[in-house]
Image (cartoon, rainbow, N blue to C red):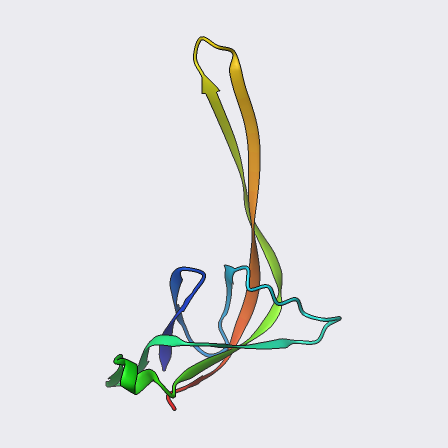
Length: 107
């Protein structure tokens, strides 16, 4: 059984026990305590049956626990305007929340 969830403007295909990095959820694990998050699925596939309509997915839920934080790769940027000696260097490193999928329930 797998599900497709939407979070942070992106969609992810998840299965139970899978860990993934998603856009920052704003939930911090408190001193080792695992915070639980319920995500709305976009699609659930269980063998031959597929749940995809809003009526079928109204009772469905995907539960995940927040494991920790992660950081993406460092991106170095450089902008300039020719002939005017305007140059600017900048860096960016995206922050993510690491979650582990615990249950997928079809409702």
